[in-house]
Image (tube, rainbow, N blue to C red; front, side, top):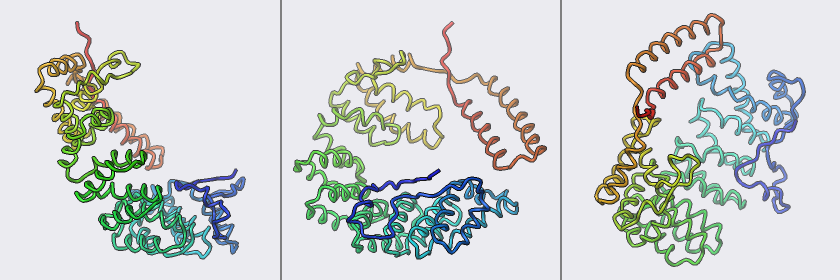
Length: 419
């Protein structure tokens, strides 16, 4: 069986005749040898044939529990832990292979580990191998990591910008977006100087992550003047990311019709952004009616009801949210509810809807009895796992999941039939 993994960055350009890196790989292809197990592929790593080294690393990548084992303290000193550590240590040196297929495959393998994560990040950020294989792999592996060394990250971005490769030059923008700080003025100039739409879109994505007042005002002006509808749409979606929320509110106050037209987008994200609550309240204060945006649902209790009321109810009575999230949800929801309660007609509508949807918590006596049963079950199950020497990674996960689901049950609320 041939194992293939494609990069997130489009691979079609890599297949083009214009791509002159002779060692370029377009994906991670490998030969799955019938009957071969982990030990056989580990032996293959010792081959002097670099293609066999590459193949072994790709096949070992499919065994995804190495990092989980290394991150489980209770497994230290066991044969399973020692085996996972041996595999990790065997592949780490291959990240420095002169063969770009081998080194990029090794980097991909090690990138899946939280074990020694900072050491890995420092290595790849300092890695200046000019291979497209290697650098594209590095970009994809670190783009979403929050523990990057900012100094090394700056050096990596600079290195990528100096490469002749179109992919690497433009891949540098992916890293700029997640950097703690950038020169927004330089990016604004680069945006203004560029005649390429793709370049402008890449820069917009970076600016969206660093929305200072200067950036907001620049983008607001660009939105008002550009004739490019794609850019206009991207900017509109980016403006709410501004660090200064008042700038956003003031801008939408001048574009109320635009706010109302896109109300569904703001309502659906009510649970995660307090700003959306303020924007919805702004629309309500300017006369927007929730009934103008009904829900289309197969559920009779939801179908035809105002989307805002449904989302607000779920926001206010979230069943599965953690306490820390509930505080955030309540802040956003309260802003909207306060705006509804200020309008006599909307107040009447909302309170009637809330009453019709109200659910009641589980009886306390049920919770107490069920909790005792669960505690007894978990204790007996733990003893059974130990008796049959079940792998602790399996037993611990099972017991933890059972306990978590029990706690979720107690947070649920069920509608009680009226007698």
